[in-house]
Figure (cartoon, rainbow, N blue to C red):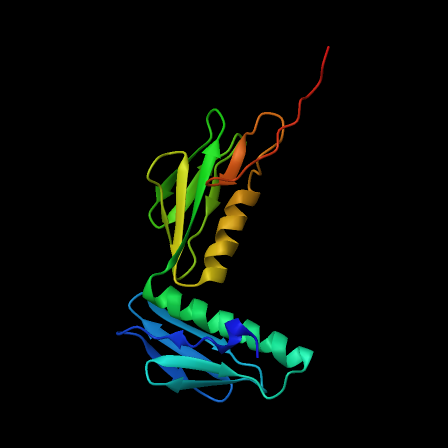
Length: 177
């Protein structure tokens, strides 16, 4: 077994885990998440920890083992602390603001771009050029942040657009006379 696969997943106080033959459900202060488990992989609770095991060392079992362990660990982390992605908007006139739970982006188009907040996701706009996406599901937070970024990707000549906080955008020189 690999080292990461052997590591048990600690379950903090206040988090409940329901293990069924084909799925694991994790419930905590930030919400409830569930994930299907591959047929050969087993998840067991040992004290205050979850242990993921595989039947053999075949390549497919090793891959599913690592995937399952990561998904379950992310579910426990998500319902305990939650996940967040931070985006920044650069460009003259580009800004974001909240309309109820939903987000409205002004990105230089002739119209505003609305982004609906799905169940389990919340937006925060601390400044008109900053967006924070929060939620319990790491996958859902990443997908929504990528969708927002896709509305106006950073372009390489002036750097205008939406980027992740701290993201480096390689700049091009442009046309020379």
